[in-house]
Length: 316
Ligand code: GLU
Ligand code: ZN
Image (cartoon, rainbow, N blue to C red; front, top):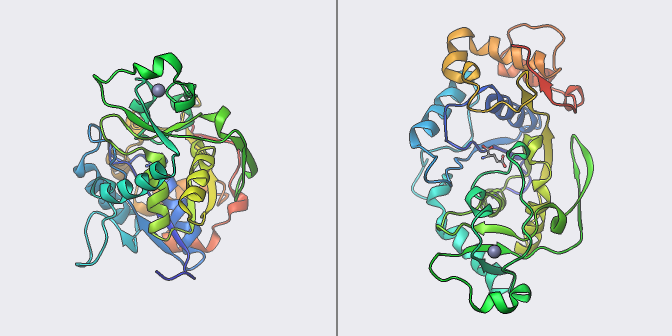
């Protein structure tokens, strides 16, 4: 691994066709790292076996190519015999080895509760509602209930978190501090059905793939604290974090796969790649008039400081 290199990444979950919000996140991670002369990596975050489909990953690749966003590393195709997999569903052994380290250090415990682990493979975008785990199954809390924990269902694995502030500086949102005990409590690193949790996989992957900067939607800003805690426990250095405001519909909700009129199958019929890039550039404050732009033109004018902090409401 080249340690001087800047490596950024885009990490889509292939649970539907990409929409404008995904394209914008892809574009900003590309711009941020490419404007430094770095490399851009594409990782497929298909941790949830029920919701992920290979065909959506392939479509995402096709949509990125259509836009002119070529990745230097990763993607669904292995580039050579020795290339690692950049698809999370193929990286289970690596996550297992890291979980073993945490388990051997006495930092994890089995949890038989039913709710939060259902959400755990998904990145906890804030609009999805956050659950603070009360520590019910923590070894020191088990008491009389603990000895008779149910064995008729499989356990999720939780990581013990400290009751202290984790501090970090986001490139766009500035200094942050999060107390994990209040923010989420002991969190799931492996679901009871065996699926790997987003928080563990994202840290292991970003660390092992040499990612130096993480650029993504600001609904994941506070997740950094969970991730930084994991980086520390696993002995990896933390990348730089730069979160971007969300694109929202008129109701003020983050764009999602439900906003069908903004999905790539529709957008590609309405716009050329340059028009779509120009639209995103204008909407995000990069330009003051709406005009078609190529990826390279956009790179020369790209400026983090022009990006607003507040979420961006689309009036379409
Ligand atoms: N896979 C996540 C998503 O689609 C992105 C997670 C990340 O960038 O850390 O929203
Ligand atoms: Zn529990």
